[in-house]
Image (cartoon, rainbow, N blue to C red; front, top):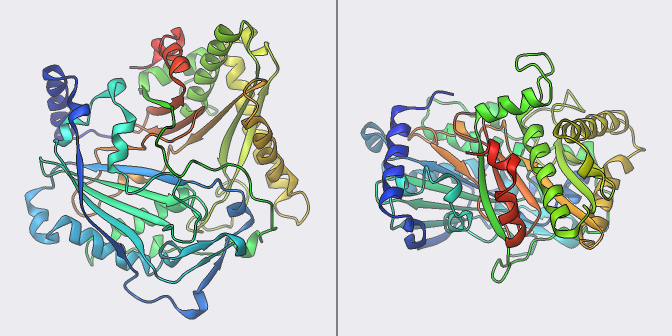
Length: 465
């Protein structure tokens, strides 16, 4: 992906800002000045009033998925065309909700359905006392917790009767740039569904752009009917206050990814070139095991899970705009002490084989009524291991790479950066594309002691910028 001259200028300014003051982040303040509910532009029909969640939605964790898109000062020729940015975004959001009507409803846990009652999406407007250039380009010194100011709500405010299924916050910077922070309820949305919504919303920037290709299809419950499963204990705290989690932002550029590929012995341009995501997961898992060893004398058993999207893998005929969750978990395991004696290529092979086996098993079973244990069992095993830190080290990796959020042009150009924030949990890694598209930005959540050890790990220092 070509980096524009405008982005180069912004990042250069950012580095000059850092040189002047390394404490600019601590001075940032976002003041909210409006909070309202945006309803669909057309009322939802009585036929669509109650939306039953699918089997895969049942398994989703109780949390919001936080995504923030950052935009520079809009070109002068767009201001007259679209008028006030916040009003334009609100209007197009309202029209988009007419198609994505479950997002304007409220979830009823006991009934496993969304009441599509048009209560609306939370819409918040805020102003930041800094320029966008003071946020961009900070790299590893960035405090992910500061980015939570651009989110409209807490990650854990979800699944209760008054919680919106979607919340949006538009924050304007002193320079005229702005950020769009979004929190999607994971109950009915995975990243594929989220990007389909964002694409639809952005495509409404004028009458010349068609959005039909992004129109949603709510058919997953008919394909995979809910099974009344007991609620999993995967729930974020409703408030992040008092949660002692450290989050850090590690950037692995294309050159580092290429070096990793060489290390695992694969041809960069070969037909089976390793994915950048699996390489970064392997590198971080190896570092986590070494940190574990340093703290305990011997590494404990290690259990790692990765969500694997099934949209383009299991049912080829399933439309890409089918909305809802359609993913499973790929588990990878190490016995106590095992990780100390294996190499980076060994970690990579374990992860690659786990994903391949998971996809193969799901392909065999999900086309039949029996065999759903293949999907359910990794969730149950994850629950068992999640709360046994004295015996098993548990890690959750999720990838938001190769999705379309960097293409979201609401009429003011494409985002110059995309991020998440700081989540109130530990042992979590969220991976996102960098702006160039060929690197990985890893958002790592650990306790303070292990985070410091991770930052000093020789492998991490060798590859991260």
